[in-house]
Image 1 (cartoon, rainbow, N blue to C red):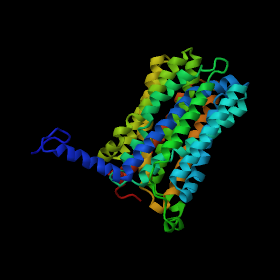
Image 2: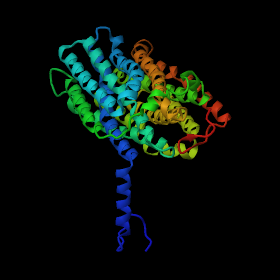
Image 3: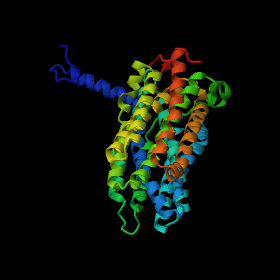
Image 4: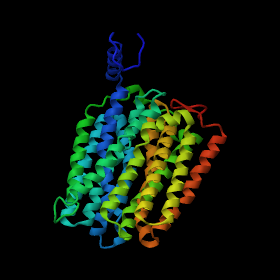
Length: 426
């Protein structure tokens, strides 16, 4: 008797069908890895979401020179940038699980140091703790590549996007934790947030012990593949890195400035947390379908759609400085980031062979987070000297560069991404 899969059939067909799905999930390490990495991403990004909301405010309260308010957050992104290459190379030798666990342990230490800095009112100790948290964030960025490592070509773009979908939980949990824990210790505002951050990273360490990603074989470790110069000169790789770097950089610049701008325009902390919460939801919620959209429409189409969404964010950011304008601008900014970053990451995975993956992933993230670090470091200074709207205007030329680069790639016939394999990639 034929029926709809999952319906109740007297002959047990549905039961057998469901059992087959569960059996397949238990045998396929990719499904297990994506679930565990998405969970780890959710926990880790919850901590990051809190940092985005409170770091500038904590820095402002501790710094004598208020233009340095976002320096600790900037150092977080500098640490992300500096972590990418050594973390990738270390994992080539010791494997993903050990490398990710070390990163989470450093995150615990960083959160405790930052908490101690809040307790002792020490700005530079706070900067150190923020940098250590950045090391953990740098390791976390490799989760998406780890998911792609064991995925088939037909599942690769979905694996990447589903891992990032863990950020949906972070979008809700992070701001809520910030609200609930910021005044946990009445005399030390925000100390509770850093204790909560340490607890989140401890949970990440536990979850990571169950991932099953095979280490490279001795032969693969011995074979370093093509020279890095040859790989990075591929047009596909250049546009991939450019799309991810500019998408992430402009998002960071505007998001880092937002709590300061909203405070400047006398909006409440609750309103600021709400705006950042919706921004984070917009960043990660599309991840459930972004991989499918890439397969159906092509990666350049998705990246260009992200550029259009970011143009909308810029427009709203220039219209007014009310809560709803901040909300709309940051929501569009999150959507644009999702399409540009996942699109760029997917393109990058088509540019290397298995034995080349660690060094290419390292250089990809080094470039991306160099841009992100610069954006974060300059955010406080630009906002203090020029104001919110000048910061918004400043990202426009960079967005234009990404549009032109992807249109150029489209003209070369590089939009046919089917199941994760770029047809005709250089």
